[in-house]
Image (tube, rainbow over all chains, first blue to last red; front, side, top):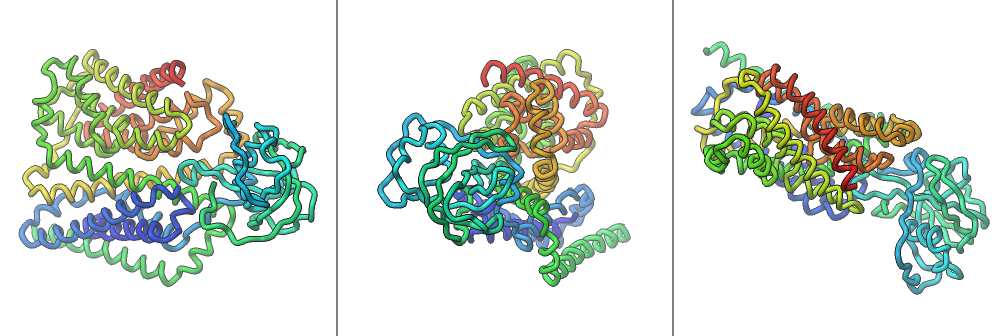
Length: 234
Length: 325
């Protein structure tokens, strides 16, 4: 791979990273906090591409021995075309119901202290927060409140569940948090549909068939299909 | 001379043209190509592949820039002066020097080669080679980010890798033979202007390390999608097998040290100790490193050094895992 081709690849790679991080695309793959670093890295790649071309065209006039070891240049660099295609052409969706079906629910961690839920009826709660409060706090801080959960539908041996992918670093470590749905109007939408479900604490508990993790349930009052949120991960 | 120049000129123009044609075709056939990635499995594979890369890009780019700064603007003779004269003391000193020098393993191999050329004792240069990619600040920060709930992982990784580097340096002093190392003659960039050398180092390292990173991300995504969770679960439940499995996985995946913590974090079925083994072995022994070492130091060196490092790294990492995790 010669230097001009490398410059083109660097430019495309940097440009793809810039395009993804200037819009919302990067949120499908990494956490929001990485954005400034992604933009800086994308810019650095584009600058490196231009500097390579500049030295290449300036240098080709006076030195020709430089091209003598062009065959030492890494051929493996051609592979950098793949992430460019992945980001610009394919732009794969955020992880969803397939991962939720394949992987076991996140083992929620216990909080030392569950603050009372904020005001609101229904009150919006994250899936992780709800599951943790139900499983470790016996649902005390949720009792008597109407809560609203947002997630996508996943179906399995345990029936219809609401799920959301939890990401601690990037989508490669994404794992689902699942909350079972019980009672109320039957959820008859296909897996992967995003819903906002309002309901109350259910005493029912389940086990995830994949990894035997505890699963909390919600007594459904109503559900409405919603658009997928901008930040699909929790 | 003119003939060879012509051939080279022709190869060059063809490469850029191939790239241009390829890109035009891709833009024209955008829809059917995007449509190929339709099955849920393939879609998940693509998502994981892209996300490993996107996550690693800032670490890769900043690591490469810093290592280019050091390679170009810090005179190499500085290292020979800075290290203690006695080899047994130079080994730990070089390992600690590796701690403050960022850069992934692809950058460390050529640096270690030039250190030996500049008269640094091979044992110290090899300790540096092992320490620099494994325990530099960027890698440790990446590890802390990837294991937000286990800060002890950072300490365990840093200490275990440092110990392996020092042990391997001392082992080389005891039983290593100078003739195992054969450094090929390479034209040096020292004569070039600093700016040119700097951008040349950046370009080369990003394209080289980035290419290997793509391979690693593809392998990681494949393992993520293909290997059934239940199967990993059974493997992960057996302490000895899980350690060996992740050590072999680290060698096969060949992920850049700046990104491997994120992959380790995703292997959440495995015990922390076996994931520590993954993080200690990976930056020191993997497929791309073995091939790079064979290229820079000679095959005779790589066939002895890599297996020895593999065994020492597993033993030390298990020891630290038992104590710290």
